[in-house]
Image 1 (cartoon, rainbow, N blue to C red):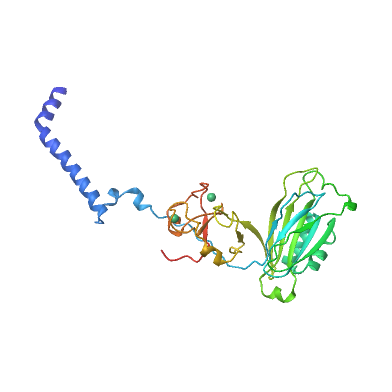
Image 2 (image 1 turned 180 degrees about the vertical axis):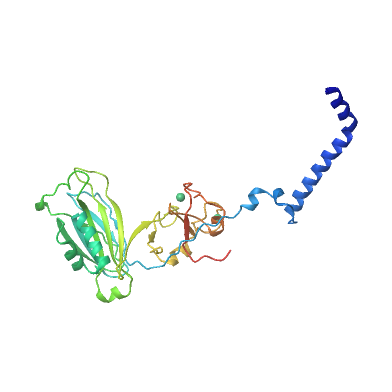
Amino acid sequence: MATILLVTLYEYSPLFYIAVVSLCFLVTAAIVLGWFGFDVPVFLLSHEDSESTVSTPEKLMVQETNPFSLALGSGSACVSDGVSLKPCCLEPCVLSCFWGCEVGALQEALRTHQQNLRLTSPQHFLEALHHHFHYHQTFYIRSEDEKECHTCIPADQRIPDFGPLPRKHYPLVAVLTLAETEARYLYNIVANVIVIHVPDGKYNLSARILFQYLLTSQGYMHELKPLFMSAEGSGQLAGEQMEGSPDRGESDWSEETGRNCVVCQNAAVNRVLLPCRHACVCDSCMLHFQHCPICRAFVLESFALRPTLQI
Ligand SMILES: [Zn+2]
Ligand SMILES: [Zn+2]
């Protein structure tokens, strides 16, 4: 049997080699023709070529101007010594600080805004909270004034801490509302509610903004979440509001030069990936990724920081 096979192979070996070489030639020619755009069978095309673009659903966004902004000020912050807040608003505003605000009372007040009574002034918030807080202080903020406001519970109130976890009171709730009635017709966003953790003897996690809500004149409430982007330029955070937009204004974005796409290092960053909120790629690189290049999270949706140019 083996002898017959060897003899057969010896007799037909030239034909066998010719067939192998011809087949190799045909495959190579098909691949080369494919590179130059000639129509060749699909199985010879590169697998990557056929999947070079992926389409991630575009999240529809609405641009709104947010007149409010608040950051924690410099210096130490604790319940006994108080905390410095640094508001920066486009219009004259009133900053209301509610120390030891009851969690349930704040939720109820926010529900009130969504249902019937719009909370557009400091007085509205005072009434909606029904005095379910320990101490209240207000500051008048001039437009674009970055002066720090120091708020503190008076020593005679004797509130060293807000008890063990889980808590029924937020340490501090800051509310920004527009000071002038006429200005409330200029903006869709009428109030900014900022819940702040302030350390005390029972829970000494450093002071930070826990979450923020924006209230609109139509009775909607949206959570304001940060975007994560390159530390170059003006910093790590920019506001993403609801179906909203960066609250720093469009001009800042277009003038930035240091925000290069992390993939091609060439075009400007213009895409925010969701749900991870990394703003790190340009429009054309977005077409090639289904995972975030920073954190590898699967990208469910994305939106543009500026109107997208057709590519
Ligand atoms: Zn790019
Ligand atoms: Zn990410």
